[in-house]
Every structure is written in structure tokens, then in C-alpha cells.
Image (cartoon, rainbow, N blue to C red; front, top):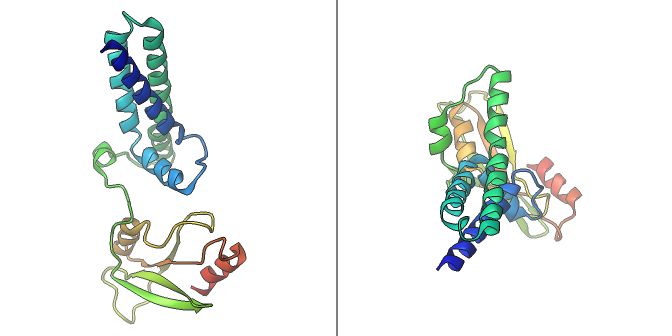
Length: 204
């Protein structure tokens, strides 16, 4: 059972360290980039896992397997150190801009996972049989003939991945602040060259 505990703790420590590494290392794929954003917003999760794993390693593993216990604890310390970068940077920026940090919102805020729904979706172009659409989030309280500022949301993905609607909660929030928001699609590589994708953006 002790060997099993060592292996489980080591695997958990490695997993939390790998997750934390996404905070500082460029993600090699689009899906890992999305995961990196989640970890950056909720870095207390891998940090908490690392603290718990290190405590188990120190109390239960180190007496019998000192080297394995030390390795797990070092991984935990490194993970916690990296996971402190996002909140420390947030505090630094808040101080520089004379803002405040709401810890309650930090721990309880919803991750923008793109599962929201736009009030309306319209087709804005049809290029070589490929339909392009955009999601519309009307400004809250805006009258039909009232001019309002607008924001065009262009999803990430390096012109080769992603889709509109990936930041639906943010788009809805911007609309509540009084902006018309248009979250657009564009053609993706390799079917389309990046110049064609930027042309789609300009068309939208």
C-alpha cells in the first residue's frame, strides 16, 4: 500500500506541476491554451492539490521513502510558487491602477466556457459556399435608433482553430455595460489562408 501511495502522490504532484507550468510556458496547442486560461483564472486549484499532496508526502511517505517524499514536496513547492504568479500580478496591476481585488469573486467567479447563448445570430457572408455568421448581443437598454458604441469580438486560435461564442459570458457582460457586441466567425486554416481570414474579419 505504501508503494501505491507513493505512486499516486507522485502522479498527482506531476499533474499539478504540469498544469501550473501552463501559467508560464506557451501552450503547444489550442486546447492547452484554453486550459492555460482556466488555470490562470483558478490557479488556487492546482496550488491546493500541491499543498495537500506535499502534506501527505511529508507526513506519510518521507519517513519510509525519504527521496520520493522529498521529490513530491519539491514539486509541490514549485507548483505553489508558479500558481502564485497570477494573483500576485493581479494585485500589482490593481495597485498600479488604484483598483481593488475581490477575493470572493476570485474564488466563486464562473469560468467563461462558451456555453452561453447569444440573443441573436445572423449570417453576414457566404464565401465559396462557406456560411459565416456572427452573434449579436444588443446593448442593454438601447433604443432602436440610439447610437451606441460597439465591440467586435474576434476569437483566438491563430486563424486555425476556435469559433464564435467562446467568450459568451464576457460578451453578455459587455452588452450589459451598454455596448453592442458582435462575436464573429471567420474561415480557418488550412482551408483558408490567414489573409482570407483577416478579410472575413474586415467583411464582418
